[in-house]
Image (tube, rainbow, N blue to C red):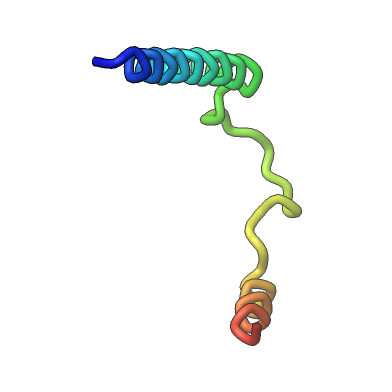
Length: 65
């Protein structure tokens, strides 16, 4: 192989390793800070699904575009 090909392969390998490290760091941070999403919390009326009338109005508006 040529020297240029070896350098390119090494750069690709370094990029992959850096991306894997970054993904691992982000995943650990999110898992640590976000907590368990399966825990049930209080449900407020404002955070529940939109009423059917509101959904229907939005759908009709989007179809007109």
